[in-house]
Amino acid sequence: MKALVYHGPGSKSLDDRPMPKLLSATDAIVKVTRTTICGTDLHILKGDVPTCEPGRILGHEGVGVIEQVGAAVSTFKPGDHVLISCITSCGKCDYCRRGMYSHCTTGGWILGNKIDGTQAEYVRIPHAETSLYPIPAGADEDALVMLSDILPTGFECGVLNGKVQPGSTVAIVGSGPIGLAALLTAQFYAPAQIIMIDRDANRLEVARTFGATACVNNASGDPVAEIKKLTGGIGVDCAIEAVGVPASFELCQSIIAPGGTIANVGVHGVKVDLHMESLWDRNITITTRLVDTVSTPMLLKTVRSGRLEAGKLITHHFALNDVLNAYETFAQAADTRALKVIIEA
Ligand SMILES: [Zn+2]
Ligand SMILES: [Zn+2]
Image 1 (cartoon, helix red, strand yellow):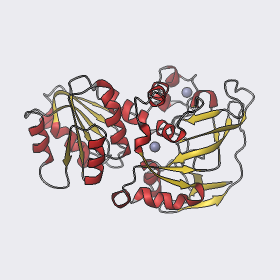
Image 2: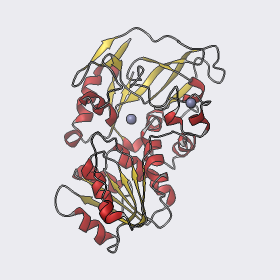
Image 3: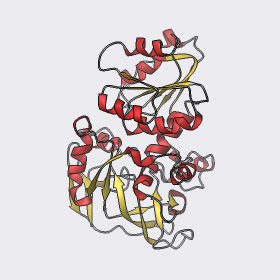
Image 4: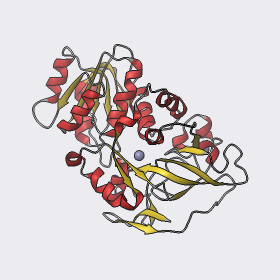
């Protein structure tokens, strides 16, 4: 089968690989029909993710059709359409029993990281019963790919952890796919203001059409002063960090109002300063999280009903044979205006 393989920092290719086999009674083999590329895949290609070793098939998002199930899998059968979660969970360990699937002792984020992933014709999914979700007949499967990772990530790590509430003020630093996913799902709670911050004018334009009440371009000028001005001088109740670099986390610290919450979503590769000299008396909360995907069933319903327009995040389509082009397009987002690219296997 064809698969996109990581060969070490800066190196990847579309290779012929053997079909995956069932390794455990709780596994399923899924024929991938649609997958996508995540910003995290670009981090891996930069060499930022040491757990991902050369030879690994990348990808942790997608939908597909069950090809084969292990003897212990009773809720899925060959032919079933399924959504693949970026988080693998056993459902039985101490973390899973607490709903913290991201830290499952035999799962977590392993797909396209510690085991072969979804940018391939077929993928092996461990703990299939608790890591796959059934797709109802007639669903828009392109849109559902957004539920593998970015929508639950934006919602759980950003909106839920950030305690977005009716009438509250929200700033989202980073208007890429994850920031936009937070923007879409924040609106479940009707905050009074959602301010999007990015250096890319096109991405801010997209954010405006997705419901942002104000946009701040931090490529120039004084973004802190602009945000303070938009919030009557006090800052925001919730600052969502959706980039993963020191400057964006520091910006969150400069705009948070007393009593507010900074919800980190970004993947950080280097240390960040924490400004306790200005924050010690401000009653703020800082949260971090790896997505648990506990909200996936709920989000699936909102996408199915049209309440959450997940398909808006998709800008490009490619065939699996053209996956290198898809990476190029996704990596050059400032020029190509790419948000999420669908890869059809
Ligand atoms: Zn991802
Ligand atoms: Zn577990």
